[in-house]
Length: 72
Image: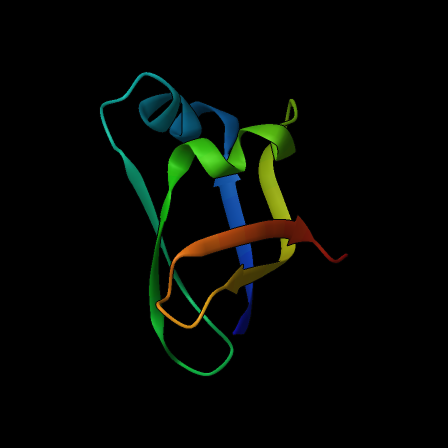
């Protein structure tokens, strides 16, 4: 399954996730579904501005994480 969504997390806000104070990022997909994604999955996309952009989450039939990629 594929889910598309936009994310904007300021660098200072992501520090809560990075330090472990918050374990998951909750986003709303284009289909209106709330998705809970481990914050550690966003680390490769962290910049000085934080995390921003449009992403695609791919899961298997059991809704287990397969991949996360920035699409724009």
